Amino acid sequence: MRLILFFLLLFTLSTYSQNNYPQDYFAPPLEVPLVLAGTFAELRSNHFHSGLDIKTQQREGLKVLASADGFVSRIKVSHYGYGKALYITHPNGYTTVYAHLQKFSPEIEAYVKKQQYTKESFEIELFPKAGDLLVTKGNIVAYSGNTGGSAGPHLHFEIRDKNEHPINPMLFGINVKDSTPPFVKAVYAYPIEKHSHVNHSNSKQKLRLIPLQNGDYTVENIEAYGKIGIGIITNDRQDYAPNKNGVDNIQTFFNGSKSYELDFSSFSFDETKHLNRLIDYQHYKEEKERIQKLFNDENPLSILKPSFNNGYLNIKDSTSSIFKIKINDYKNNPSWIALEIKGVKNDSIKPEAKKITPYLIKTDQTTNLKEGKFSVDIYKDTFYDDFYMDFEVHNDTLILHDDILPVKKNISISYDVSNFSDTDKSKLYIANLLGYSKYPAYINSSLKGDLLIGRAKNLGTYALALDTIPPTISSKNVRDKQWISNYRFFKIKIDDTPSGISNYRATVNGKWILMEYDYKTKTLTHDFNDGIVTDTKNNLKLIVTDNVGNSSTFEILFYRK
Image (tube, rainbow, N blue to C red):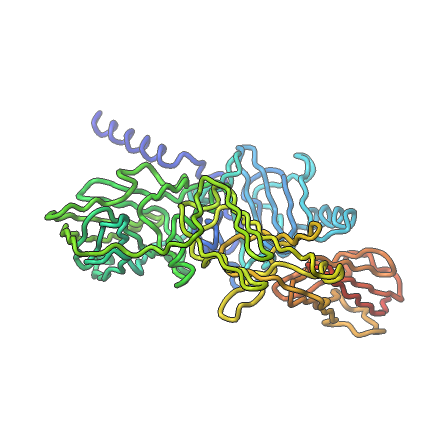
């Protein structure tokens, strides 16, 4: 009996040590069954996903409920990113986040709009005092929407600790049905050193993946030698949804001993950019697939747990080894991959040729590159590894390598515009030429004297661009001199193709009015329920400005009773 009690206690302590988060404190934020479009720490563009994307049945306006008692500690409304977002701080020290909202509850909506009209700005960030907006668990705090960078109606839900580190909400008992093990799409092997090789090649190799009837996988046997690394493409699916989501944990075992672990339970926003080091960034940019490296090449991510030899495999001649990969989703549905490696040394294999240019970029140094009218400043610790950069200037176009290496810091690109007239100088910007058509995408640019300076977030091709075309403005639902007494909303479409919209300002009879901007539909919307428009005869004036200062003015007369 004592032995049974001992093992029960051991099991309880073990379970608690693995998950010491409160299990019944937070309730689901929606009344509908929880079906996910995105999971926690899922691999996204330049970042890990910081919460759960909960489906809202392809519609907006579902009630969003406070997950626990607390107070609204932050409200942010932005054109991009989270769109309309609400932050609730709870007595236990955690904060829940609700994003891409359509609107807030009436009390919170009135609080926000009052500040928007005071500051005359749609975009706003507020930090209410602890007693200003108290909420009770289960109360309506907002309605689900599709604002900001959302690709479709859903609720983005987070739980953060006191240090603002996001934690997987499922660790707190937020339950989502999942009986399907992770899916593996591909396995790759990387010769790491110049004398390493896999299947008689010093280049990355895609291995033949063989699905088994029990849901696991094996890989066709390979021959290798030296220091190698393994990478996989994997995702998970929950029940009731076809979405390809992120996994929860990956472990590797070399000849029976654990060699590597990735744990996606929590991370900090400061480190999320290092996702681009975790994946094979060049493969992602070229093939639009994310290969997760199962080796740690000096990546500072905290989700990488201490490992043997940083997950690298040292394969010796005339040996036989077994390498296994275990992939778990949050519900501990596992998928296993088994790979047999035969050590065969081949001295005739030539190392993969490395391109050498006159421009060696060293990670521990600041580098300035200059040619023609272009000057490029690359600051210390911008890249992870030293490399030879392709750097060319052709008239007004700069080739700054291919976008195949992850960048940690902005790169400064400046262009001498002293030969341009003052009028043209103000309309110039630095553009990143994207895709096959070399579409000129605006990057943040500013004029300082005769230098036009842009901040580049990635390598690639850049060019000097000129925008003299003002934004376009057109009414979507109201004609000039129209009676609109029964209208709830006034909608206007705005657009600017060359450099993009920077700001806008709308007034009615000289008084500022709130217009919400949805960049996805290029629509400005005013809600007459704000009560600002009270006259019968009304003159709307809208001024829209693009990123280089071109502006357009739109005026229309309308009537309301």
